[in-house]
Image 1 (tube, rainbow, N blue to C red):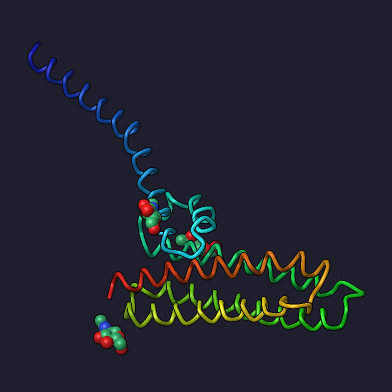
Image 2: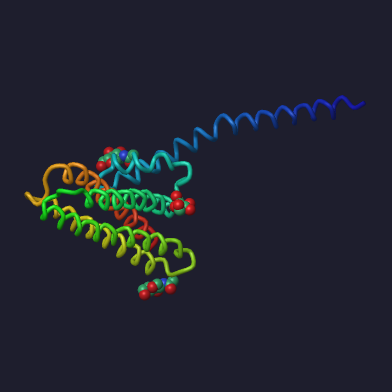
Length: 199
Ligand SMILES: *[C@@H]1O[C@H](CO)[C@@H](O)[C@H](O)[C@H]1NC(C)=O
Ligand SMILES: *[C@@H]1O[C@H](CO)[C@@H](O)[C@H](O)[C@H]1NC(C)=O
Ligand SMILES: *[C@@H]1O[C@H](CO)[C@@H](O)[C@H](O)[C@H]1NC(C)=O
């Protein structure tokens, strides 16, 4: 029996275990911290940084400091919120007894928010082609789709200005429209950042 070989084998085993421990103990928290910091500093450049951080930090580990995944996640979150708001608009617009001007404003909103959902979907489709196509050309298409979605949301919000809408419809819907407009504005800021880093 070779004592020297055995002790060096022990040494290796201990080193191996130590490495396992260091990767279990040190790396995940380190990455979590780094990923959270990446989302936070990226959100810093948006118009609504707190909303940005609140909506994206739960995906920090998936985003993992990739600007493409950050943008994709921001668009996914915005699309999901827009779809749900679009469904709410349809429901509220069918409430009986709304004033005619409210009915008209709601009908406009149903249409333009429906358009903005389509445009967000188009932008996500374009982003998916980014690795196989001309980066700056594709990013410019993504920017165009997301800007169009933002314009549609603004158009809907204009319907809430002044006394066009009152009461229930206004209370329930306005907050949601403002939120998706802010999410869209944030997504556009992140897209603009991504576009400018690569050109
Ligand atoms: C966010 O921006 C402010 C100044 O605009 C800066 O002081 C702060 O350090 C930034 N935070 C992060 C996380 O980048
Ligand atoms: C975006 O949403 C799609 C469809 O739900 C999903 O397959 C994809 O993984 C999401 N991407 C990111 C980066 O979250
Ligand atoms: C991408 O398209 C732009 C605008 O048409 C052009 O200037 C640029 O050279 C293209 N880049 C590549 C890598 O093809």
